[in-house]
Length: 141
Image (tube, rainbow, N blue to C red):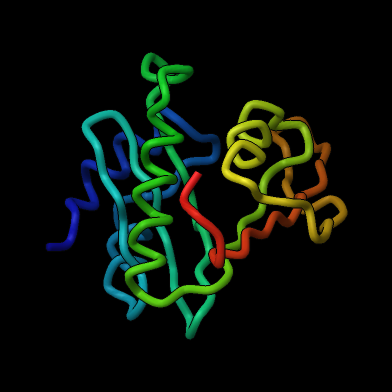
């Protein structure tokens, strides 16, 4: 079942700046290999190509943060990845997003690259993206 893009867009708008539109989420969800793990207060959007999967976005409502929601969503995504035969999962995270980095490190993800100035900020500045990778050959965290 495809999740409701309007619901996901509403969560994304409250969780992330800049937010993705309902149309963008609908288009992504219609692509082969894209799926979402969804809870009432957040979601993770994934894309698989062959034996690799990418976290496209993880959004948790501000009032639900620091309660294990992001971890639960990521663990659900990891379980689905394993079922789908994914060997490696990766994502990009802003170098200044220490909370997200702590979550991903808890899952065992390691920094494997950096994209300089990848994320544009509303004040005109930019911040690097850290590329994090997880080999799924091990046990679930």
